[in-house]
Amino acid sequence: MLLARQLYFEAVKVGDELPPLVKPPVDRSQVARFCGATGDYGPLHVDEPFARNAGFPSVLVPGMLAMGFLGELVTDWLRGARVRRFGARFVKIVWPGDVVTVRGRVADRRFEAGGRYAVDIEVWGENQRGELVVRGAVTAQLFYSGDDETRQRGGQPPLVVTPAEEEERLAKLSRSTAPARPAVGTRPAAAPAKVQPAKPAAVPQKGAPPVPVQAKVPPRPEPKPVAKPAPKAPVKKAPAKKAPAPKSVPKKAAPKTKAGKRR
Image (cartoon, rainbow, N blue to C red):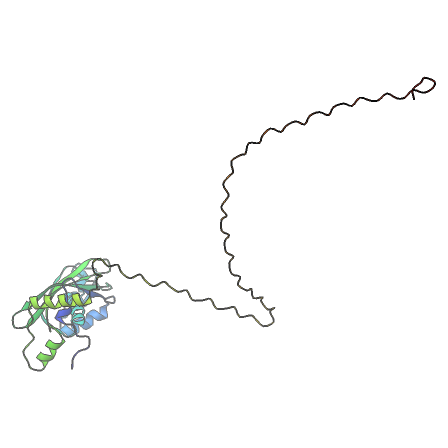
């Protein structure tokens, strides 16, 4: 039966980081169980008075327990791959109550002869103060792909892939997933204008007066500008002739009366 979410060599890249694993605080009961499981009952790990007389503030957490935290991180990430080598170096003492966080990173990946594929992983652990307490290295062997695993589990020889073939396969994948570029000299089609949805009409509430509906009045056409007539040239008028003054008519003398007087 194949393991779920199997990790394959084709999916691993140099520089990939393993998800960090944060362990609960180490207590004395965990130390006692680990000593019982390994058969290592060193007095520095289980005898408090002995550890104090030796100059330590309390018992020491076994270094192999911190190394076991590294192994838990790697095996959870490899998901069924075979571990070929595992080594560690203890840098600082882990005390009861410390919170150890273990991390890892892919340092190298190799194509080996006979269709074998290996990865080198560097791992390390830190306490709650950020101090390095343990450092290690793991070498694991993986199946190249799902087809390679099926072949080997069926008794067939492994799938042999060279680095050149892998680069060619990755190049084909990148070309197939790359977006198409527009031809030279052509402009990309303009994006269609966004159509704003019409606002729904307000529903009148019961008992409310009806809302008058305003009819849409078409906009009035703007008046066309009227051209102004060109100014006319001024016309010179002839001077008006003066009418002749009327001639005075002499008055007739009144007739004389008998008395010799005029009327």
